Length: 477
Image 1: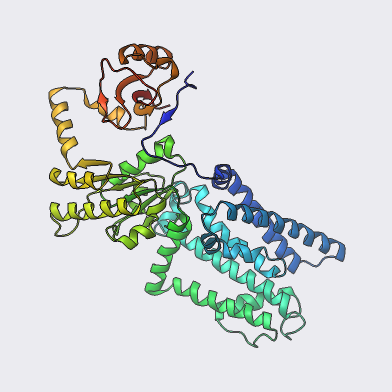
Image 2: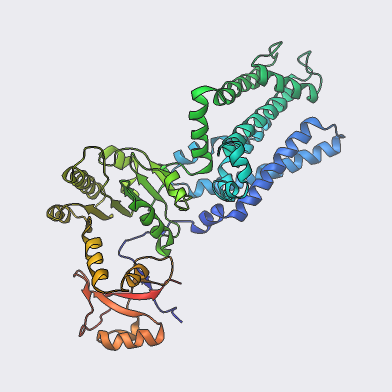
């Protein structure tokens, strides 16, 4: 019924290319299938190495493994196609590229590492912890990190076993078959030494890799270095880190305060920003705090640096962002003037670097708003002004608070949206058009924004033209 209505936003949100591929790679079904293929491929590598087979069966296993390799090559090629830059693609998928190199068959085992990036599809950050609370108590809330470290140990043992079997069988007197290679890999990893050093160049490279794993994994389990590395592993494997090079048409939120959770939630609920990435730029940004408020952080990245610095804004990809929100960020010994000065500096720098971006800023002092408007900032919100007026209104009109809560959120009920005027209401006055919109779509016209003019609230005799934007109250769904 409402197919003739085109919803708008005042933010120019340019569509991302290859949206279907992006949605496919982000889907839980695709990730589940990919995990299955990875596990099957790794299983074939282990079978090929450790299970005695007749030549015909061995050839079949190799052909199956080559088929998996071809699938992974196609998948990587498509990921390269949708990557923002080749550099960011190589930085993210270098292990995967090694894993599909046919001549380096041992490196195919490296595909196990891809599981660490795909764990978040199964909500191991929230759902699993909630369902398996006994493990949370057992490991004091760190069982995910222990599983990650254990997976590295398993990978290292089998990597060493396959590698030593490939290069040392028949060369070293201690390795006569793949089983010997497995035990040699395990004890070398545990002890950090090799009784007789490998004879082949490939064997020495594998042993060197085992030493690196031995130092890294067991250092993480002991002392201060362990605590630091475990926390880092959780951030980088369970939640998406800040990768500004990969962001495009994203939302930047500069500054961190209690409002961030509400702000982020509204962006996530807004269909216009359904596939948009959100980047928090602040030294105080905290994903754990957002997750504690039940915010889905899959599309949220963090850049923990000072948002008032030009080089930080460039690093945050301000030239490719479509929306920037600058919050009043409190700090030790900062007065309201100091906070506003930081906001003004960040906002004007953002507008200078990217004049096309839609910028909104929060201020304590209204007298500074004119500075931001002159600098090209689109919207300025005065700290406490709206909440003060809202308090006065609800104090004098009992029950009106529910109206504002309903309109200002997309969680349920109704919301405010801009639409293009349907052809049938062109040249109608607003009163007549309202009757049509309510009868046909159930929408209520509350304001009109003529082209290059301020918003007109509750217009009475305005004739609707094709260049107008209509602000309506409409159901969320």
